[in-house]
Amino acid sequence: MQVPATFEYERADSVPHALELLERYGPEARVVAGGHSLIPMMKLRLAQPEALIDINGLADELGGIAVEGDELAIGAMVRHTELLESATATDLFPIFRDAERVIADPIVRNRGTVGGSLCQGDPSEDLSAVFAALRATAVIQGPGGIRTVAVREFHEGPYETAVQPNELLIQLRVPVAPGTGSAYEKVERRVGDWPVAAAGAVLRIEGGVIAQAGIGLTAVGAGHFCAPEAEAHLEGRAPDEEAFAQAGRIAAEHCEPHADQRGPADYKRHLAAELTRRALARAAGRI
Ligand SMILES: Cc1cc2nc3c(=O)[nH]c(=O)nc-3n(C[C@H](O)[C@H](O)[C@H](O)COP(=O)(O)OP(=O)(O)OC[C@H]3O[C@@H](n4cnc5c(N)ncnc54)[C@H](O)[C@@H]3O)c2cc1C
Image (cartoon, rainbow, N blue to C red):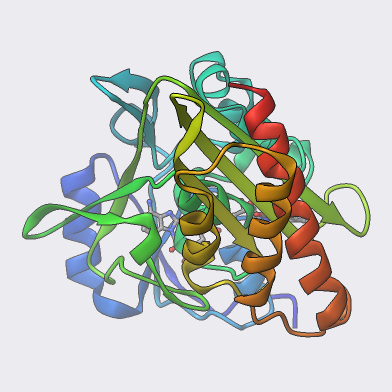
């Protein structure tokens, strides 16, 4: 079935208006951003919202990429292409360029948004691993005001996030610190495909040792898209190949990949180790 069920359509003209519409239509309403995940699901009738609240008119309130104090702020309505082309974001964190270059194709990237990607909560989503590696914070607005949730606590399960039906994700905030390098490594079956597996790494070096490590993994069943045991192994060690290889092995041990059309579980576990090692080495080389 390639035709969606019927639904009401409303175009929000401000964040308060969008929140008011979400309240008015109740939990069966859904926000539509780029529509690249939601509309195909509606066509397949995997999603049948009674109302769509279109937030594409909110680029002023929910767009923009800027350094604010010691954080990089990225609006929820920033399109993949904007992030890929943002020198502010990619000079500070090359992990964004690495990842965005291999997310889908230009058509999807021109429309799909950062906020939609995180809110979709797909277990193979690339940006979830990126923001988990970066230890970003999600800023959520609802009728009660604004609250923040660590991206590492944002995903509550496949396709489930901390954003409630009457709330909007409005921004992602990434801590900025000197001495930081970052990178993303992905294996896909063909150009533009979802990952078979992918790993992101963020390293901060102080006095010749790793002061903080961030590792994000996607499509391999890593809890909350991260690898805290491998990060703990790295902290306080010299940033060398042996440490990176061991961190990769630890990260892979704690994954729970499932076999599917993209590959068998043991292959994905192998990729988790190898891509983590490669991402760490590349991140270290960028400091
Ligand atoms: C052919 C194709 C290939 C793709 N390949 C990849 C890939 O390789 N890697 C990858 O990571 N992704 C991939 N994607 C997904 C792509 O990145 C989508 O853009 C993304 O998943 C959803 O973003 P969107 O803005 O289109 O969200 P939408 O489809 O508009 O929304 C998705 C969900 O998020 C909710 N939502 C959206 N914005 C908000 C908000 N601000 N607050 C609260 N809820 C919100 C919606 O209600 C909906 O439930 C692909 C998609 C397609 C169609």
